[in-house]
Length: 110
Image (cartoon, rainbow, N blue to C red):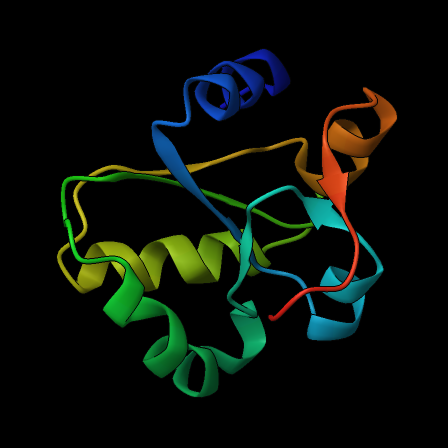
């Protein structure tokens, strides 16, 4: 989805945002309300995230660094294989969101 699509869903509070970047990067800053689900350590992060995603029809938006970053693809593919039906990737990712000046948070529990 595009930046405007991600912001629209953020404003409606209708979607769960997942940050697929490293925990250190998540701590430095992430989309407000996003949960950290590091794409290169799915097995380690899944037990903490999957139980929170109780509705398989809930819209989930996954993002990472944008551009050539494929961490969000790894997370999205894993969720779809687990039975989640509405998984989207925010292509512009963290850099685009931050550049637009949209709500961000630092720290927090990955």
